[in-house]
Length: 310
Image 1 (cartoon, rainbow, N blue to C red):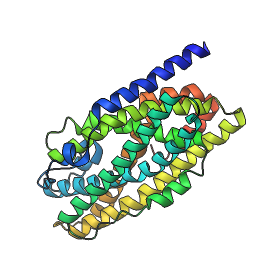
Image 2 (image 1 turned 60 degrees about the vertical axis):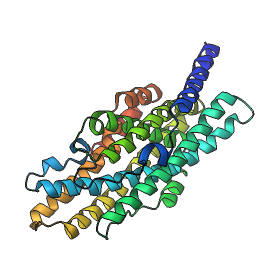
Image 3 (image 1 turned 120 degrees about the vertical axis):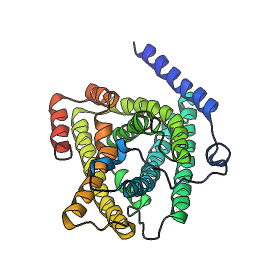
């Protein structure tokens, strides 16, 4: 049975390599192609930005909010891919003198994550050249990565798998179907989705492998580590949503009263919690993999911790 499982996993690594080779893309040649962002269109779709819930906000200002969120969305991916790349490079060492197929798959994963970080830096720069000054992305990728990587590998891989899976869901369910988005913005996440779909498979394989090495006591601590990481992510979202709301008020044409300003701030936080936490937690594939590893008591502990965010 173990030999059969190893063969199955080995084939999954090999399949990821084959797909990586087939869909390989370059930032300038394939993605940007000399294009610019269209600021008369939205960046993030309504299903992610939640701006349509703000019935008192004009269409022009809703578009502006979607563009501010779209810039933060790109920066958030650049942020998380810093620690994802570091963790994948670390666990690649387990295969250096072993399974060379798995090693190649993870090396390709790391290479693609480095490319994605460059892509998201370019997005921020291009948007920043066209939007008014004053936007700030407050969390520092290296500082966040250092905190995340102090936690157990099980928890980091769980968070990573969660991120890769909500990336897939966001693109297929919200970004791809929305014809009102900037064409360049949509294409960026098309190309990102193509490579992330393989990363999600590799994340799951490595997460399951790590789980097999844990004692019950270590898994208890790993579950707490995962909760700590989600709480830390929520702290980042609270700070960034406040900053983005302040930037919106700075540049928008409308004058909002105190209650309206509070509603906009709350909606931004709700949208960010949906984007970066809840949509991933609710992904059936994530729930299935997580549920196969933990006890009912551990699951209840996670659910209790998430209840205030849901």
